[in-house]
Image 1 (cartoon, one colour):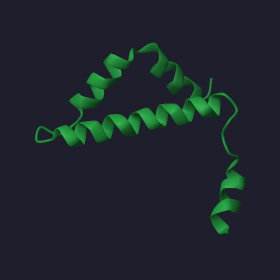
Image 2 (image 1 turned 60 degrees about the horizontal axis):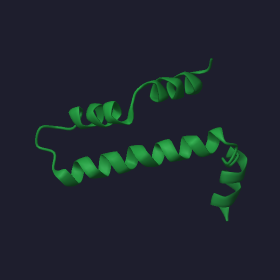
Image 3 (image 1 turned 135 degrees about the horizontal axis):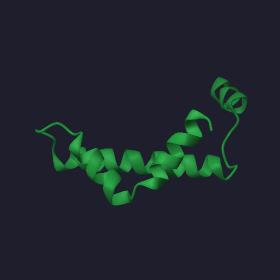
Length: 70
């Protein structure tokens, strides 16, 4: 199992609640509600992107480079 697949398996093994709590624990003591919300939205977007890749909806690396050169 590759590194990416094993990290996805680890993510799915924990509940969303556990992952949210872990993310909040990692914030600095002086973090604001806005900091916490931004972090959670960021993590949700990562999950959504990884799910798209798992479902074959990703964009090939060469295609991304081609689009950025335009």
